[in-house]
Length: 146
Image 1 (spheres, rainbow, N blue to C red):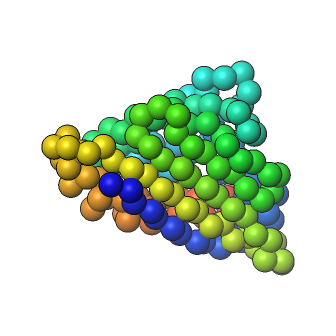
Image 2: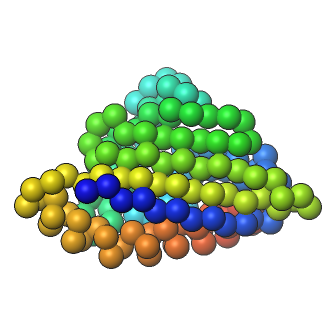
Image 3: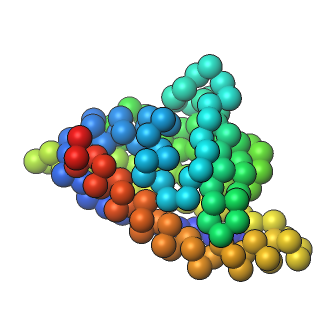
């Protein structure tokens, strides 16, 4: 079963600072709700081709290896799973002027089918909205505090 979550936030900071913060994998655990692990598995740490192993705990731990599949400086970061839970995460950045930036997040995930998938879905679905809200609030708070 495929699910999509979308969120848009505004941050009082220049687009370059917001992009740099989101694009830095070492800071992701500071703002992404439930992320308990994110480790690079390639020498490349950013841009198309960079890969990471991650564990997101939203009710149950969800493991995935993601690869950066689209990247444009100060505009776009997209990660797509290549192992584990099927997911695509896309962040786009828009300069609103006056050192304000809008970040649009689009996250698609597919949970496995069968009895195991249904059990995971029942544990994950109620938490997803809370996770997105908390992640957005933490991102705004952390970047504006820089």
